[in-house]
Image: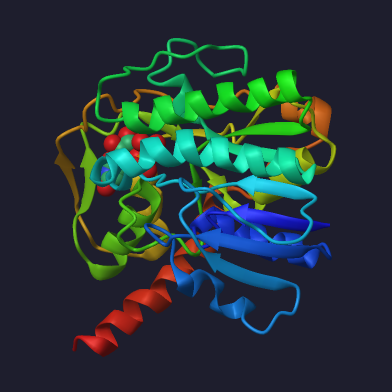
Length: 317
Ligand code: UDP
C-alpha cells in the first residue's frame, strides 16, 4: 500500500512510519515540524520507499499519485505544546482533519484518525469505555485540544456515514518511549530527564492523580491492527495498568538509581484526576493487549534519555 502519515516527524508518527515501512508499505510522511522533529526521521533517509513532505495540513493538501491509506497524526499533543499553540491545535484538529478526510475521499484511501483519551476530559466514569461521552470543559485551557479532537471524531464519522469512507478512530491513552522530546513536558519524559540530571522530580499537585502508561511499541501494534482489520467505531488503545503520578516518580527514581528529590508543583487547570482505558473492545475485535510492563518500558526509555543527557553534558561541560 502507499500510505500518507501526517505528523510523521512526531513521537508516534515516526514510530508509525518505521512500522509501516517494516510491513512493506510505501510511506509519504508529512509534517510542518511545529512540534515534530526532522531528527526523528533521519534514519529513514535513503529509504527508497519513504519520502517527507514539509507541509501544514491545516492548508489544502496536495499529494501526487495514488494513496491507499491516510493515518492522521498531525497535532501538538503534549499539554504544554497545545497551551503554547492553541490556535494551530484547533486548526489542525478541525481544518487539518477536514483536509485529510477530503484527500482520503479523493484518493479512495482508508482513513485513520489519531484521537485521544482527552475526549473523555476529567472522566466521571472509571475506567473509560468507548461508550462514555466524556466530561470536557470546552472553555478551559485544555479545551483547544479536547474539542478539536472531538470535532475531528465527529467529522470522521460524518465522512464515514455520508460519503461511505472506510474510517478508523483510535483513542490513544498516555504513551511513552524513545523519541519523546526531553522538553516534551509530559510526565514520563520530565521525570526521567530530571532524575538523570539529578534535578528534583516535579510532581504536580499531591501526585494522587492517576494515569495508565502504554509503551510505544504496544501502542503502534494496536494501531496497526486497528488500521488493518478494525471497524469505524472508536477504539481505545492504551495500557490499563493504572498508577498514581507519585508512584511513577518513585519507579523512575528506583530504575535510574537517581538521588533526586520529589517536589510538589501546582496542579495544572482541568488536569484529569483519573485515567484508565477499558480495552475490552480492542481485546475482542483486534485480539490486542499491551505486553510491555511499566518497568520494562521505563528501562528502555531511560536508556534512550541517558544518551541524550550524556550528549548535553558533552556539549555544555
Ligand atoms: N505531571 C507531573 N509532573 C510533570 C509533568 C506532568 O506531575 O512534570 C502530571 C500532570 O499534572 C498529569 C500527569 O502527570 O496529572 C500526566 O501529565 P502529562 O502532561 O504527561 O499528560 P496528560 O495525561 O495530562 O495529558
